[in-house]
Amino acid sequence: MTERSGGLRDWLRCPSVAAPFTDDALIGAMLRFEAALAAAQADCGLVPAAAAQTIAAVCAEHRPDPGALARAARPASTLAIPLVQGLTEAVAARDAQAAGFVHFGATSQDVVDTALVLQAGAAGAALADLLHALGDALAALARAHRATPMLGRTLLQPAVPITFGWKAACWLGLVHRGADGLARALREAAVLQFGGAAGTLAALGPHGDAVAQRLAAGLGLSLPDASWHGARDRLARLGAELAILTGALAKIGRDVALLMQPEVGEAFEPTAAGRGGSSAMPHKRNPVGAMLAAEAAPRASGLAAALFATLPSEHERGLGGWQNTVFLVADLFDAAGSAGDAVLEVIAGLRVAPAAMQRNLDAQRGFVFAEALATALAPALGRGAAQSLAEAACAAAQARGGSLRDAAAADPRISGALDPRVLDALFTAPAPGAADAMVDRTLAAWAARPRGQPA
Image (cartoon, rainbow, N blue to C red):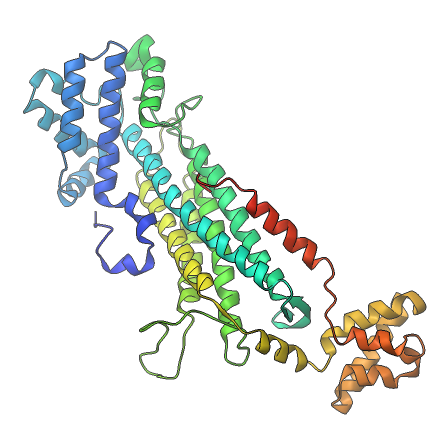
């Protein structure tokens, strides 16, 4: 098992989101389960209080070498077996009687799955903080540029005018929905795994449910209706939400990268020494934050698919479908954290170029107002005839190399149907449509989100 911090892969991680999934953190979470289990059983009279205290004290100090633990896990098929063996030996060195109560009534999957949900909760809180900051930065961008006109683009071609504030509000909606979806999945996944050999806690007799209730409370987790060794839907749903969020963040990054192309030049990532340079071309300014977000999306979708593959688990505990889940989920948090951290840096320092946006609008020679022209003609001529006249004016302007405004004014069928002042207005100010209302609703929804809790 390779240490997850201080290595070459750290450049594809957000430190705060990755920290709960280090080797030491995983070992600590498993030992936390064992200490809480002994305490819960002591509360129910199944374990002597002194033995539970000894177990808890050893768990607080015991830190096996991750490499040695990984090597021992290979023949055991799970990390929990060598961890429990080492813990038992460490407890026995202090109190031989207490060692007999280590891991009492539990099974390996109880330890690993519960450790995973504890780690996911900590990583989710760090990711929620990041998304709060990103959402606030996007909201500020939407407010500042709600009236900044720019060219809308569909299928990578000029479409109709929009505002940059509306575009930023659409990005904010992606982050809002992604954060809320992740929060729901995290809440659903934050449940204790404790079922013993086959899920029914048979070894604890009539005390099983009482122990489970106390164990869940001690770990700050919910008690599920039933243990879930063979039911992997909660973790699959968590993986899906992480992948969706990562893809949404990558969409924002990709949009910025396209706006940053020199031939577009409408928005730019922040600059800093060593940021965005090329090893071969000194003139280049690469969209590195966008690249980090774009890199993470396909990685996350593949990892989520691997979690989906664990769903058809066999009977009460599957073969090979749960042992690596902690690492799949860790890698998904890596992808989401890396993308979120990169996009936050981009948006927080984004330089917007309204003059370039207007210049690109003007360069379209009015063709982006063709829809507005057809819409204005429709009440007098009918939708079909209006569309045909607008298309004819576009063709005439293209053939002559002139503007759509001039071609429309030269067509007596159009000039006869529209007052010259109306025609001028169509080509001077983008019609806002419902953009302002959409921006208002998006900003209001974000402002109404609870602060100070996981997204």
